[in-house]
Image (cartoon, rainbow, N blue to C red; front, side, top):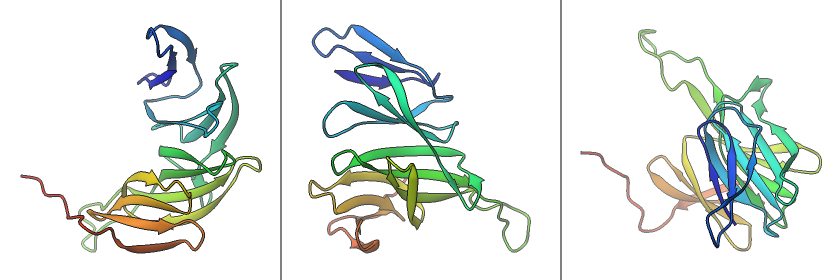
Length: 180
């Protein structure tokens, strides 16, 4: 099976052998920002940039089974960029943005308009444990042992330990990106 996310918030399930559309999942508003299969392949986690929800789908039935609403300190997230299944599908790692009103010292220009959060979700209880607030460019990978993940932040790749919530030094061989 192949899945694709659309700008209208729909997710298309396609047969991998033929590419034929088998189902369309509807529920998000805004562009789909990430799709992630559960380890057993029975569920799909999806995120969208405008509704600030993580939706879990039963792939066989084509139904949304869980909606996780992202917010921090009572402030609703403005976007969820990514959600990745961990362990045996009982937890998720998410990257969400919450609005931030901050001005520079001279009050003439605004700084970054959002804070970026990495959260660890318990799917059954629908609760999360905030891991970090940091400038995250992307969550790149989760290790097979699921104790570490790699995150792009501050122009470097960093290893993060899920158990201790510690950020390790930048991964060796990574360099800041430059634009010309």
